[in-house]
Image 1 (cartoon, helix red, strand yellow):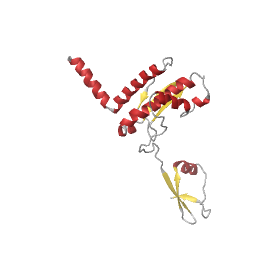
Image 2 (cartoon, rainbow, N blue to C red):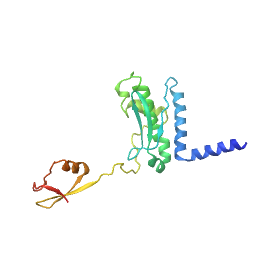
Image 3 (cartoon, rainbow, N blue to C red):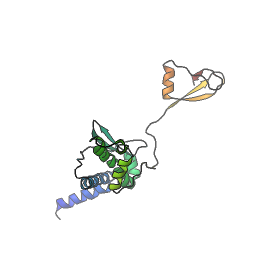
Image 4 (cartoon, rainbow, N blue to C red):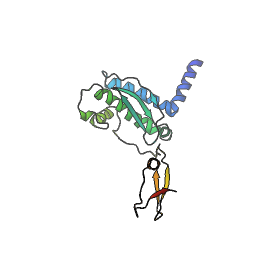
Length: 187
């Protein structure tokens, strides 16, 4: 083995050891499997990003009768690499196949178009995966809800307003206490 071949092997081993490298390898495997299982199905190439945040592990976005991209939650991928690579990548890939097979062609009934319906389940089984709908990873919300404290002028009961409700107050809306119907003011 010459130097160039050793370097390629070393880079391939390093890439396959990283979570992103493992995801890319799984996608290549799923694409090859798709060609074997559905030879007439033309799966488009689409970007894969790892910038999804919050409680969602992955998603496929489709627009204008084509698959736009596949998004993966990078934080969850780092924390749950094995399950994300083995199950979530296949789950999202099955959605992409489902879209190309049942939506873009507009040939099949609505039972096959439901996001986790019979069409998706059949695809998951043919790919050798369990048709599991949701993950059970420990997650945090991507949204950070800020609250503003308000107090009743009569009974002094304290309320927490969301930013949205507080902005309505700033626009002129007023709210009353649920106990004594007194006016609420910002603390």
